[in-house]
Image (cartoon, rainbow, N blue to C red; front, side):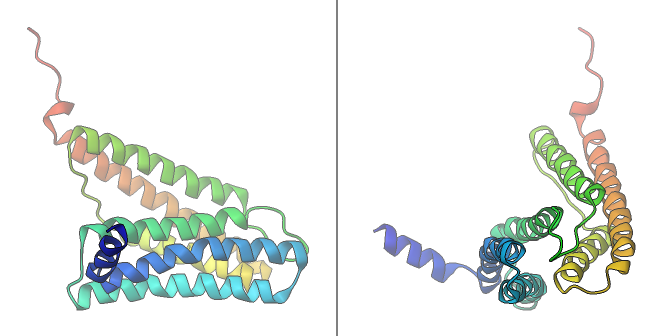
Length: 205
């Protein structure tokens, strides 16, 4: 019975959501390959890590296009898509923040702290808004999209072993966009809370 139910659920799941789940499944494979490479120095592991990360990043655009083009937007997709993005980027940033010399350059710790700190603040804010207002409205902004793209570029730049002199520039750009996007999300959250009756002073009895 359970197998039949799972089979029916898989058949009913949209193609966009299946691609998003594939992205999530690629993340542990990517992390393991990076760790194997930094321990052994075998180029095959680095190439597999690049392939896994690039595939997951490309599929991010593919599942979004399919969802829009074929009207496959769903509540599950609205949850899984940003979750897959966060898991991929945070995994890549964190695993590359350690000292992997002489094999790979490292992500600056200040950038790792900025990214993780922003996400923790946003998650806490979303929880507060969900409990207070009952529904959260998240508006994607250009700085947030730029931050995602720049973080992906930074991870791939390190994995591909391109000119390390550019890493500071990519890190600074990613950090600025990450910080700005975080402030904009906080601003949106404060406006949602301010518009709700629970934020008004309690009447004295």
